[in-house]
Image 1: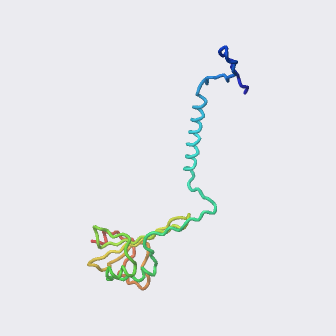
Image 2: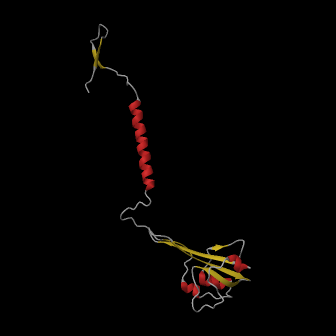
Image 3: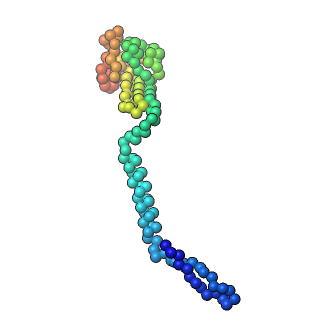
Length: 162
C-alpha cells in the first residue's frame, strides 16, 4: 500500500516538512468481526474436545484403580454361622461400610478398574444377631466346606433381620 504524504506549509522561517497523512478508520467493524470469529472458533474447539468420549493418547500409562476390601472365594469359604464379629473381622478384614443405624449389618465392597478398562464390583453383606454371624448375601456363594445354614442367596436385608 503506497504511503500518502501530506505537504504542509510551515512558517516562513522553517522549510516545509513531509508528514504522513492521518487517515481515520472508516469503521471498526472488521476488528469486531475478527474478535467474534476468534471467540466462536474457541467455543467450537472447546466443544469438540468435550464431545470425544475418551481421548486416547498413545503411550500414556493408565493405572489400575482398586478400592475397598479385596474379597476372595477362599475368604468366603472360611465363614461359618455363629462366628463372632471379631472372627469375621480376622477373616474378612474391617468392613468398608458399617451402618450407624444397624450395627448388625456389615458391607464389604471391592471395585477394580484396570487402566482404561471396564470397572468391576464385588460385594458381600454380613448379618449378625447377638454379635454372632447369622448369614451373608452378595456376589459370592459359600463353598463346600460351609454348612447349609449359611444362605448365600440374594435375600433382602429386611427378611433376614426379622
